Amino acid sequence: MFDQDTIALFPLWYVAFLLSLTCHEAAHALVAKWGGDLTAYYSGQVTLNPMPHMQREMFGTILVPAITFLLNGWMLGWGSAPYDPYWEQRYPRKAARMALAGPVANFILVFVSAAAIHAGIAAGTFRQPEQMSEWVGLVAGNSAISDGFARFLSLMFSLNLMLGCFNLLPVAPLDGHSVVGLFLPEDKHLAWLEMIRQPMPSMIGLIICWQFFGHIFYPIYIAAIRIL
Figure 1 (cartoon, rainbow, N blue to C red):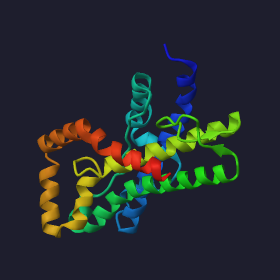
Figure 2 (cartoon, rainbow, N blue to C red):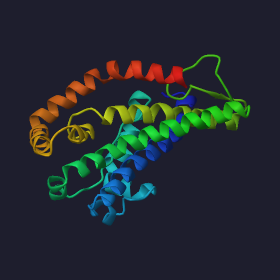
Figure 3 (spheres, rainbow, N blue to C red):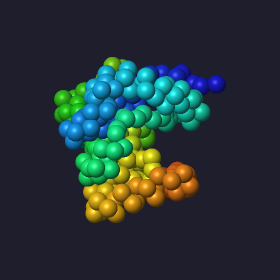
């Protein structure tokens, strides 16, 4: 049985998750449009309206986040922005920039959340908590309403830092496997994509990432909190 605090955090988590995912996928779609691929644009995904993103990936944006929250107390899910694979083959550098746009959007949300937290502290609306906790307890409010905003901003800071870092891992289908192309000659980049997208390397890579990401992310997260 879940306690009241956990139940109360569900809408907060879901709004933060959906906003973060929508910005991530919209950034992919927008940069692809700038690069000449209108596939995601015609699908209606160059938007901060979450509905087109949810309609495309209902399993990853509705069902999986709810299940993972009920099981673990935190949310996991995914979205996707369609693109033209022939466009990627012709313009691999543009495709790599499209891939990078999603994590960059997450890191922008990290900085926006941090700025809002500092503004709230300067205004006397927020304060440093007596005991800091992960995800939603990085900052506290001086009233019930401001405490809700403080929890939301804490969650946006933590969640987007995690999403940005995780998606940069160089494993398909994560964005990082394509971002690698920014540092490779085009022919080598295309060969890398062909190899890394094979089912076996992709599956092995995801298993390794799932097992070891916590060891990679934890020191980054602690450093980010100290900077915050």
